[in-house]
Image 1 (tube, rainbow, N blue to C red):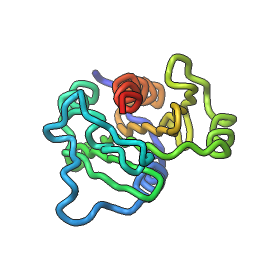
Image 2: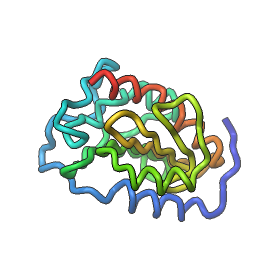
Image 3: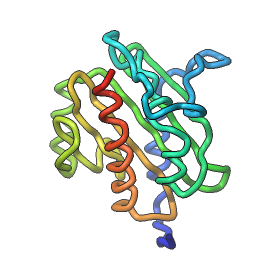
Length: 178
């Protein structure tokens, strides 16, 4: 699909990278949690909280390729004591990336961001688009706060939000099943 390049997109990438890439990485060699070989029946985590979720198993390589129109890398897991994040990046120079962060729910964070975003119906216990950065999406589901962010410099913010919603429809049942 031919979509116009949006000026200022680099700012979105910098802000997204600072938010999505702010947690500590997994140890060298990883923990086997990558999107490569993931299945749609991935077990997302356990009662230990968001940090136990295998975030890179929430989407398959085929699902990402279908939605983004290109293959992205296997994904990089990053965790802290209260969250798990996976970042998938497109080929160098493509300007394409996908990020999913699952964190332990915090009412004050939700209240802060929910009041600043555009409500989205039909996702989780509540969802807002455009927070914590434009064009990402934040979703409240049970004990978790989930942030999905698509960066693609060649498409509009609205198209990126549509991609966020498509990924949310895949990810939310997998988190709920765990």
